[in-house]
Length: 574
Image (cartoon, rainbow, N blue to C red):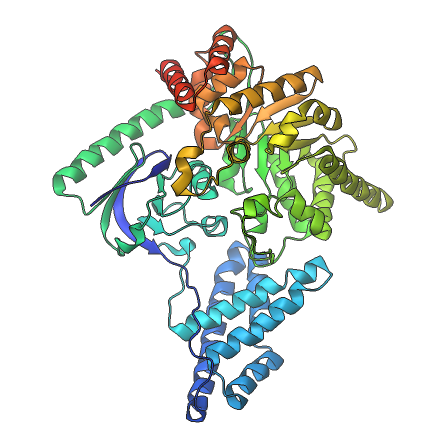
């Protein structure tokens, strides 16, 4: 069987299928007969015992690797064994009489809502703990096995309907040969994670989950966008050879990783890295990049069942700063919403989350969470060269309001005699077209800006970038994208302020060449894209970049621009 998908992370993989289908509770009948009460009592108590055993096993596993997460599971055990909650559930089973799973859903959901409705931000987030415990009991009740991408026992092709950032945050990258999903696009966070981990990925293959089973053999060709299930022996050998050849080319390009990012005419370009954590693998890039152009702080919030404390955030940010020394680290404040959800936060259900309460808008509603992060960032700023960047900015009012909360945190730390860098640069993400149109006025308000090409394209083109049914309308090479970025670059240059590119286009050699011709000299990308961009730079002159930019800005269709940039990249990478 052959399927066509969207190749979002290049590569070729062959192996056995692992079907990832997280448990989703489905309620049966609410009421039971009186004669069934005893059976439901026993079944509930057994489910609690098994849940306790699972949590203790998790605590044991995490105690050595991550004591903080072990504490989370201890808190879950406390909730699970709470006498009052157990009594409420048993009362529903015995007095209504109510089915055990329905009783669990009813009681725990009540506590979820109770905590979600509290005024205190920290207490609000406790609702996620109750939801997690509830789901654990319901899964055990249903007799379903626990699944986690952290527990892959052998190398496998991972198949899923969708992978949330919280799923990929736990990914065992050593055993993940490839990722295949039914949903998602080239700028989804599954795609971004796959590229940063250099895992081949095909997304948007509708209905594929009905065609695969665990252990089935498959080939993922994320160069041409093909998925082949149960290939013949000849086809297997063909793709093994193709994988080997692609690996050879990749190794050759990797030799440019440590090369200085200087163009053929000695023009220096800033090549920075996008990171989402401070584990050793991500911080390896500190040895061969000029800094961090985008620290996605939301991944810190996705790693546990509770919100990271100010001290925990301080330690993480400080670790990144110490790894990069005098080189700049740009921390993007919490960007949650859209396709990014966090178990520790009870977010509103929205018809269109990409246009809803996300990123800076959410922080303005959850000021306790926002100020905790700002305080942690300010405290860490004395340990290196930190800059702060606000996402999802749509107006000058947004910028001023965010700076107001930052100033409040500065004053708090001063009154507490806690040191911080009073001259820490403050910038914004340019993602909403409105702020790009207002670039000259925005440049007067901030020290720098970075273009997030993923969301800028989504909002400019009025297309959901994760919806495979409209993938053809998500045109990152649309003429309007280049013209708007060119205007923004000119506005920031007139104000003497720095503008960089940190979206996926910032790691595309052809696009980078054109942006350099528009006057942009700083780019941030996943570590995997650094060698290719550096290799391109060694062959590019500023004069040629300007000619390429002028040509791109004259073109009127996305297809024309794609062809021009592809040809330019092939020539520069040859």
